Image (cartoon, rainbow, N blue to C red; front, side):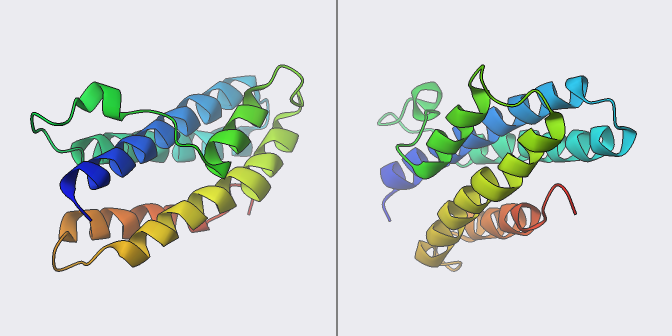
Amino acid sequence: MDIVTASRLAGQFCWVELQLFELLGSWMHRSTDPELVVALGDRCTRHGEHAEAWRGRIATIPAIDVERAVNAPDSAVASAISRLRQPESADDVFSLVAAYDSEVRPAVLAAYRGHRVEIDPLLDGPTARLLDVVIACSERPLLA
């Protein structure tokens, strides 16, 4: 995989993680269940950390504008996130979290696992390690 393609994917993964950071953070403030607030806060923080890590994987070369590289992918992930942002989405935070676990999380996992298969850890160890971390985090349902 060339550096421009790898940076484009890192930018898209950064966008996804930023969206999830914002989305789960907004749910955290709407929930009255203390355990759910803690779970949302923890996962929200992890999504924020992952977004920063993906931004760091975008190459800083003349051919790439880092800010423009962070954009929505044309994928099931972006569609699932968009559905959860709709005004007609359930007001019940538990329903939103259930949709996150059943729609968004599997789509994110599929994208990360697909990219992990393409990465040679000898050629791009930092990206392989980052993928291992985000995959491990994404494998855990929010509502256990």
